[in-house]
Length: 243
Image (cartoon, rainbow, N blue to C red; front, side, top):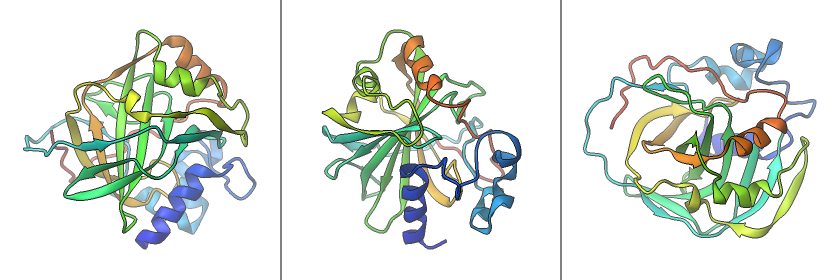
């Protein structure tokens, strides 16, 4: 898949109302993850060898360059696309990795977590999705542990869209930087989108340190979905996971 098409698929997949009649995929039953690759020819990558999510284990020690985060308040709207709740971001926030700048496009959530760390599943996972000027994708994943209320999520959840297709302008610009832990060390692997069309070639940067969320906040997210929205763990195959 060409890079420009990959990015277009990402934006359509994550930004539109996926409960529409022309989508026909979900997380259970005949349209569930085990059938994604057969639902349409565009989903052929869903049966690929470098798919996400994975169980992060068997690490290879590496001198990973720190991610340079350049986030500012820029979350403009929150939407429910039928598969997740997502915050769309205006231009101006980015990360730098591998000597390249990746612009923050959006953040969305999965409960329970899609990736596991050393076999552990988390109650909630955020995916911060970025693209560079050539439409290469990089996803920063943040894990949540149940503890106290998360102030940044509280701001977004105050306008939680309860039904598929609901979309609201946020009353105050959201700063996703508030979701990041103090320690920003990370694991790294090559993977894919975790939803159809499952396009590969995505840089995955999974932060090692989790952040707090309240049980009520996790429940509020789960209540607006029809069930869990996590794709099952995929085979690592010959890939390495760096730490």
